[in-house]
Length: 271
Picture 1 (cartoon, rainbow, N blue to C red):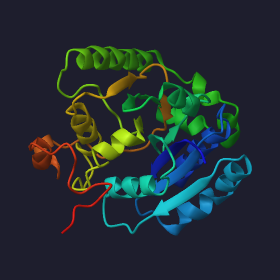
Picture 2 (picture 1 turned 135 degrees about the vertical axis):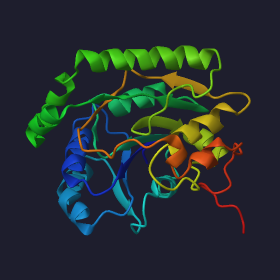
Picture 3 (picture 1 turned 90 degrees about the horizontal axis):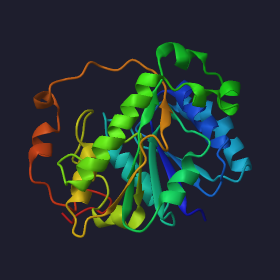
Picture 4 (picture 1 turned 90 degrees about the vertical axis):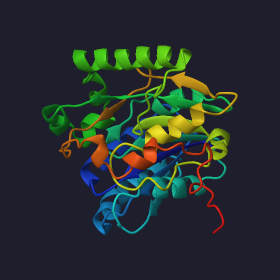
């Protein structure tokens, strides 16, 4: 059994997910399993990615596709379910289905892993033109790894510094955490009971909450700051305009003093 699991959140974007999965065919290690945490996509997605999953299986990488019914944004619920499907995995690597990994992505997370730690990292956000230029062959050739714009490099350097010093001086909301590229030691993830499933709806909440609760532990966990070291390549796609925080479904809940070990998470509290 593989000691690491890559858990990819997905929802109805088969073209992007196909390119992302091709990135795992060119990893420089194969000691991991790959689980797609599908928040209710139509059957078209499963059919379109099936050939690539077969290629991954043939390459010795075990794959699984975890799905639940589409009842709105319930990402935390399906991510917890994906974690339950890999009880042997000591390292949980989380990313999104529109992100293409560099060839060293999984190995770097594995190399940085230690007990009771979590990793934060970022993404090069590709332009619409750069994303349109990517095809299956170009991803397999690693062409996406050359699409690093200077402003993106500077942004990741800034995030590295803010996360490093903010963590050192115990600033709130540090380190900066992004659900498209983070990893957790399984024992640490279980200690805080995984993702809080009370976070329903898109916006502020699920990733920041995980970081907040982990950083309130005593002793504090080890933070691996991998901005500029192990960043993925985020494909362009239209996004809804940002809303004020007060309009987000989970804003009031996020502002509360939430327990470190969430009540509705990896393990459910008895009714």
